[in-house]
Image (cartoon, rainbow, N blue to C red; front, top):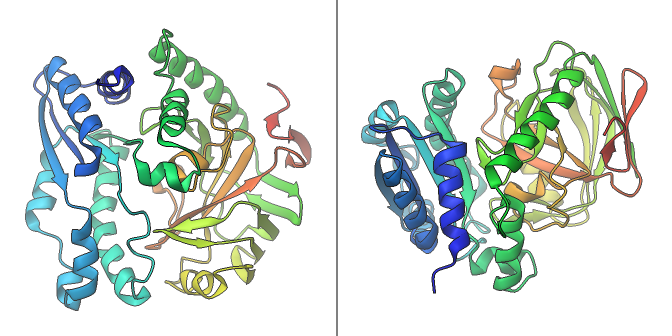
Length: 369
């Protein structure tokens, strides 16, 4: 029996997130393991009159390319992909994997070359999105591999995913996400007046400059589920230390108990109880990798646990996260890197955030509600 929540999620993304209109061209992309959700999205797009087409991948192709491709092949991106990107009105990306550890043993230099090539294509996509010429939404298919990473049964994980998206039960998911827009917009308006943020928690006392930077409301338009407000901090104004209670996960590799120290915007010291060598290599990926490109507040309180999947973990209600590497140009960010790695700091039990010296966040919530 087909799960009706898949159809509700497809309709939510096609309608609310992407606002598909008759005659528009939308690419729906994902690996074959995500077939059920790809099907639901395709049907929802057709019902809205859009010209939808599927781009279905095979998960192990990238692994094969990394293992056997030449340097030139690793850096190759087909002109057809570039041309395709320029013609689209919207893209729906569905993440789904059978094995979330495919790249665990990939040689870092070769992997970096592969990521760099793909990042140029992604960068052009973000330029079109920022200009209002392209709409994009990324979501996740609740498959076995993700359930295993989250240490849940598949049924439990499906309930978790659909609950976080608000497509379970008889409620109106569009009304819910419109309410999220109003709430997070209020926080963004306040934060745009702030010059400096100070984050205080266990082994954490980090100051970030944010003067003049815009704050982005993440309300289900670009991710589903969503629920955060974020910016790109000033590149030379991060000082202090921060410890991340949750492991950092990058392309299937896990780094535990990360502790970073910053001076004048750059990481000057790093520690980890597991994966320290990998952490050091990521920080040395390029000149921008040791600079913060993002700072965000997680505000989706339906997401209440760590799942080893950043789509959910960066939105855990009551956390903040920072990202090492590339920043968001549309928010004023200037840092460039082929790395963008989100790391989550849990402030729910014992944490505070000060804005220009005023306490604005305590134990995982803004004090103004």
